[in-house]
Length: 568
Image 1 (cartoon, rainbow, N blue to C red):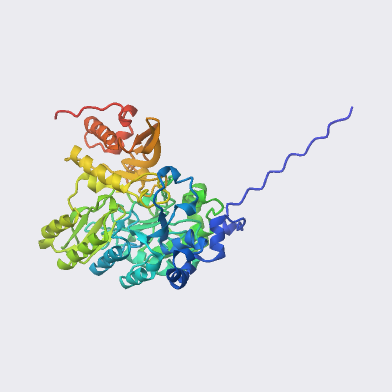
Image 2: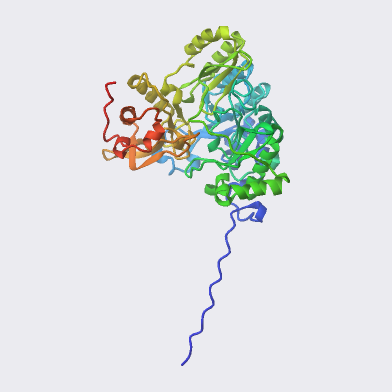
C-alpha cells in the first residue's frame, strides 16, 4: 500500500511592512507618499510666488493643487451646486472650486492690536469679509484667489504671522493656553517652548514629511485648556516635589473615525527641555509611523500598538539618549476651561474671554476688535481651542466699557450657555468633505435653545460636525453631532448621528452612540430640547450632563420619552 506523502507545513507569510522608515519599509508608496517623495512640499511656495499667482488658477499643477498647497495652508474650497450626497461620489477635481480656504496659524501667540487689524483687513480685502476662529486656534478665510496669495503673505509677514504648514502632513498649528503668562492660577508658562518649537521645526525639511498631520498642545494651566487628551503630543503643566513646575508628556490622542485618548507618560520635563522632547516624539512619528495606509498613518495607532512603556523607552534610548524623570501625571479637572468672562491677572489687570457664535467672525469684526483694543490700551488677544477669543491686559477701570463695546460688535463676554458652549466646523458651505450645513445650522440652534432654556444653570456643550472627521471634536462634547444624510418620509435629508455624554478632563470619555439613532437637521432643536429637559428633571445634585447620559434610560436619550421638569 502506497503511503500518501506528508505535505510540508505552509510557511508563514512575512508580515507586510506598514511603511515604517526606521524598519526599512519605504516601498510601495501610496499617492500621498509618492507626491512628497517627488518634491518636498515646502518647495511649492516658490511656484506660488513665481508662477501660479502670475498665471492664474489654470496654471497650477494638479499634484500641487490637491497636495503640496496644503503645506502653505491652502485647500481648494467646495464648488457650489454639490449637495451632501455628492461628497463621496463626485471626482475630487469636480468638487474643487477656483477659490481657496486659507488657514493662518496663531500658535498660542499674543496677537497685538496691529496683528488683529492685519487679520481683519485680509478678510475684508481678499476673502469677501470671511474669517472664522477654528478649534485649532487658527483664523480661517474663504474665497481666496491664487493671484492674491503673495499680497496676503506679505501682510501676514508684517504682522509676524504665517500660514506655513497650517495643513498637510506636517506639524499643524500649535495649541497654547490662551492665558499663558497672566493667569493667577497658572502652574507654568509654556509660551517660550512653543516659540522655540516653531522657530526650530516649522519650515524645517527634516519635519515637513510626516506620515500625516501632527497636532501639538502645550499648557501650564490647571484647567488643561488645550484639550490635551485629543492631540498627538501634549505637554501638560505639573509639579515635581523636588524640581518644581514642569510638564508631563501625553501622546497618541486623536478623534476622527477611530477616536483614541492620549496616553500619559507620567514624567517631569523642565520648560527648557520641551522642544527637544517634542523633536523626539515627532521623530518617532516620522521614522516609525505607519505610512502604507493613510487610515492608519496617525501617531495614535503606533502608540496603541506599542504601549506607552515601549514608546517611552524608544524616546529615551533612540532619540533623547537620556532617561526622563518619572512623576505622577497631574490630576485632571472636571470639564474644560474656555476662559469666557472677566478674570484677574497676576499683574492686577484683567483678561476678558468672548464668544463668537460657533467661531464665526468676519474681517470687519476683527478690524472693529482691533480698534477697540487700541482705544482701551489692551495688550493683545489670543485665540482658543474652543473657537473663542481672550483679550489680555485690560485695565480694571475699563472693563465694563470694554464689555459693552464688545457686545456692540457681536462678541459677548457674558454669553448664554448655548452661545458659549456650541462649536461647529466649516461644513458644506466651503468644505469638500462635509455632508451637511454646520455653521448656519449651529447659529439657528443657539438662537432656538436660548429661547427654550434661557437660564440654564449648568454647562452643556454642543459640537456640530459636517462629516465623520470630527474637526469640531464630536466625540468629546456633551452633545456631539456628526453630519450625515438620513431617511425621512422616504427621502434623504440632512441629519446627524448623535454622540451623547462625551467629555475631556476628569470624566474623559467618548460620547454614547445609540444604535440606529439618527436625527434630522430640521428636528434637531426639538430633539435636544427633549433630552435636556429630561436631564434637568432626572439629574441628581451636582450631576453633570455627561454623567447622567451614561446612566439614563435609552428612550430618554433617543427623545422617545421626555420627563417633565419638577415644579421646584
